[in-house]
Image (cartoon, rainbow, N blue to C red; front, side, top):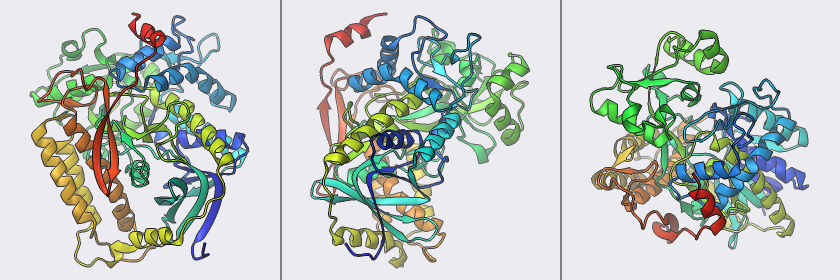
Length: 571
C-alpha cells in the first residue's frame, strides 16, 4: 500500500468513544489486542453523559424482590415483545456485574444507609432499579471508563471522522477517514472493527442530541453491506426543554419524574390520569411523549406548546441534592428556579431503538469483521427503550463486542486493502469542493430536519410518510452535488456535507420502514393503523442494500424458549 496517506494499524479499531466504545476497548485490551479508538469529537464528549437518571440493573439493593427475571420481563414489555429476546436475557442477567465492575474501576454512586448502591424508580420498571449518581450518572460512567481505558493504554484518535469502511473481499479490513482540523486523510488497517457511534437525532429539528449524532456508524455499516433493523423505532423523550428557543430539545431527565415530578397541562390538570392511570408519570416514554403531544395538539398545552413538569412540592434542599444538574440547567438557561416553579417541557427526538443488526452473543454484524454496540446496534430494546437500559446496554454489549472483536482478530490474517478503494474514498470526500452549482450543506440539512420533524415525527400516517420519503430522495439527489467553499482546514461546511450523506441514508431507512409497518407499536404510532397487528408482532423490518438501492425485507423473530416464555407470563 502506498505511503501517500497517514496509516495506522490495530487488531481492533473502535469507532466511537462513548460508553459502548470504551467498554469494548477495555474488554479488547484485556485480551491483549492492540486497540485504536476513533472519535469524531473529543474524548469524554459522548452522549453517554446525557443518560442522567441511572443504570438499570436488578441489584435488589432497595427492592429486595427485584431479580433478572423481572428486569427481563419489563424490558420485553417495554419493547412490545419485538426485542431480540436473547439480548434482553443476557442484558438482564449481566447488568449487575457490569455495575459492580464500574464501581471497582472507581465510579462513585449514591448510597443507601447500609452502604449499598442506591437505586431509584423509573418509567416502565417494576422496582427501584436505577443505580445513580444524583442526575449525573452518565458523566460519572464516562469519567470512570475513560480513566480506565487511558490507564490500560488505548490509542485515541480525537477529532477524526471515519467516512468509509475498507474491505478485503467480503470482510471489513479497516477504515478511511480524515482529521477534522487539518482535513488530512488517514487510513486505518484493522482485523476487527467495532461501531459504537450512537444515534441519529440530528436528522430532526428538535432533538436532545448534539452535533455528532448523525447516524455515521449505521450508514458506514450499511454501505459496507451490513443489515440494519427496526429503523422505524425512534424514541421521542417526553421531556425536553421547550423554552427559550436556543435550548429547545435539551434533555430534562426522567429522574425528575422518578423523584416525584408531576405533569400538568395549562389548566392545571394532572393529565397522565387519562393516558395511564396506573403508572401516571412513570409510564413508558412512548406513552408519556404522546400524552404531552396530544395535550398540546388539543389546545391544553403551555404557552410554548408543551406541558408543565413540577417538582416544587418537594423540599428545596431535596431537589438540589437529587437533581443538581437540572436545578442549574433551568437556572442558567431558562431563568427558572425548579424548587419554586414548574419546568416547561415537550417531546424531543432522543434515542434510536433500531440500528445495525447484530448477533446477541457476540455483537457481530452481518459482515465478517464488523461488530456494533450501544445505540448504533439494534435488538435489545425492541419497539421502545426503557429509561436506564441504555447505560446497562453499553456495559453488557460494549464488553461483549470488545471480547468478540479481539477473538476475531486473533484468527484473522493480515489484510491487504486495494489502493482503488482508498483513492475512491478520497475522491468522494473531496467532491463538494469541485461542485460549482449545488446547494450548500446548511440549506440541505435544514430541509432534512424540517422534513423529518413534520412528516416522520411522533404520529405518522401513509400520506405524510410517502411525502417525507419523496422529499428525502430528492434531498439525496441534491446532496450528490452539494457545494462547499474554502479549504479543508477548519471547514464545518465540509464536515456537514459528509454528515449529510449519513443522515440521508438513515432517514431513508426510517421513512421506508415506518411506511411498511402498518400498525402502532411502541415508539411507532400510525394514526391510520392505531392497533397492534399479529403479523408485525412477529416480524422485524430488515434494511438491506442491493445494487446501490435500499430494500426492505421482513424477517420472523425466532421462537422464544419455553422457560423464558414462562418468565414473561408471570405477573
